[in-house]
Structure formats: C-alpha cells, structure tokens
Length: 115
Image 1 (cartoon, rainbow, N blue to C red):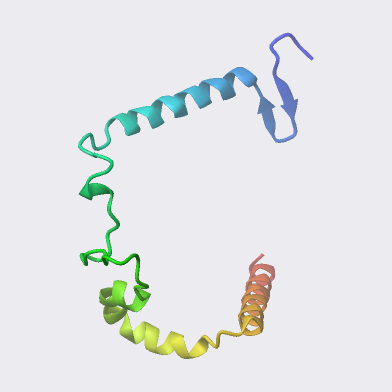
Image 2 (image 1 turned 30 degrees about the horizontal axis):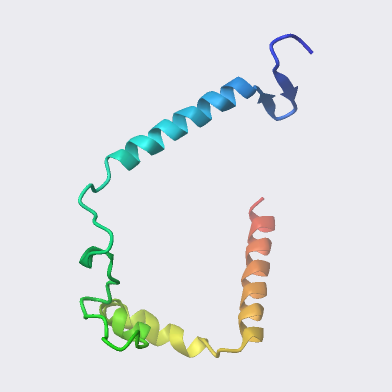
C-alpha cells in the first residue's frame, strides 16, 4: 500500500476523499433543488387538505372513494387495454405466482438463447 490511501481492487479503486467530494456535491445539488421549491406553501390551510379529484372532503370523516372513480379518465382512455387485462386477474395468489414464474422462465430462456 502506498501513502495515497487508495485501495486498488479488481473492479476499480476506493478513495475516501473522492467519495466524500461526490457526497458533498450531491448534497449541494439537492439543497439547490430544495431551495428553488415553492415558497408559498402554508401548512394548516386549504393547501394541506387532501385532493380527491376535485371533490370536497366529506364532513363526517373519510368515506371510501373507489379507485375506479378517482382514475375514471385513465380507465376510459385505456378501455381496450383493460378489457383484455381484467379477465386475466382471478384474485388467486397462486395464479399470479404462476404468471411470475412463467415470465421469468421465458426471460431466462431468451437470455440463454441470445447470449
């Protein structure tokens, strides 16, 4: 080992000063982005209330709002996709695990064939 405190490995080097400088640069960039944020936020006002797709929050506590109501525009725009996809969802965890294993096996076969 030499006096420069650099550890040479098979995959590169480890220099603590280089890592500290990189960390310092990341902290400065994060602080700059944070400081350019919205200055007009006021906690405890209407800005802090939940946004429920433009609907007012119910007076008697939170009522369950279905995702189909919140994302109606997305569901309507992608209706052709969802009409094919929804019947594949049985709600049975075993089916989802089977899909996961099947897709993983397919990718593994493709990786072996390509390489």
